[in-house]
Amino acid sequence: MITIDSLTKRYGGFTAVDDVSFTARSGRVTGFLGPNGAGKSTSMRVMVGLTVPTSGQALIDGRPFAELPNPGRKVGVLLDASAQHAGRTGREILTIAQRTMGLPKLSVDHMLHKVSLTDEEADRRVRNYSLGMRQRLGIATALIGDPEVLILDEPANGLDPAGIRWMRDLLREYANKGGTVLLSSHLLHEIEVIADDIVVIGNGRIVAQGTKSELLEAAGTVVRAESPADLTRALTAAGITSTASTDGAIRTDAEPALVGKVALAASVALTELKSADTAGLEEMFLELTAETQREGVAA
Ligand SMILES: Nc1ncnc2c1ncn2[C@@H]1O[C@H](COP(=O)(O)OP(=O)(O)OP(=O)(O)O)[C@@H](O)[C@H]1O
Image (cartoon, rainbow, N blue to C red; front, side, top):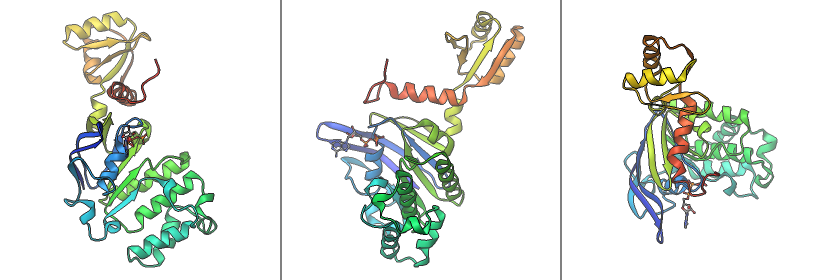
């Protein structure tokens, strides 16, 4: 389990991480979602003891990273796949990790196989790796100590669709066995397909958090009717607030089942009724982060 408690990091007068608190639970994949510059990497660097927080703390199973006896056996970390030593081969990098952690020699071949790097690729220097291969090697290095916790910063960067699918399955299996996974991304879709829990950060502050289903539920319903005006009237009469968009769709926070009942009672013919689902989460993500996005949104 990872516990982040009132974490703040200031660089001079600039607050990169502002009073952030959340928990990444074991047996679950927690997605850390936010636009560029939101403070994800800074928070993760604090978690693994690379950045000293201004205040607050980050604990791994109740202890700061620096106090873990053999950290690689407890926490697998991938912060920047491009930061691996370019002059070493993938096999050498994994062998160093294996020796540092006191693991059996066989674990190197086992991990290479697990992340689908061939023998030929493993003996190539990292400078000649594609970004996707670096990510696979980084994931292998994070996993080699068979840790209980995984902290991965943008691990899907550079992976092709098959690679993303592979990583998703790997992380799911890891969490199903009781592991804790925290992974960051600035892409909603990536987080949405992998995560059980989602923490959304914007401008250094947490703007939303909950289980994926809670966040999806909060997204409400999208409904269309032959006569949108009649439907809006019926919803209003039933005490349900709704908003109509220019394409004729009506959005409301109410459940689809309730909207259907109201329409039936008012004899309004519906042409579409669906949970706002993915579209809702996307809108929420954009809304929640628009004001706080450092790089702005094109008008
Ligand atoms: N060492 C530093 N000194 C000054 N400012 C920093 C430092 N490290 C990070 N920052 C700033 O803190 C903010 C948060 O950066 P961070 O890298 O944590 O964001 P992020 O959410 O990981 O973004 P991205 O998705 O672009 O990687 C940024 O504005 C960044 O410029």
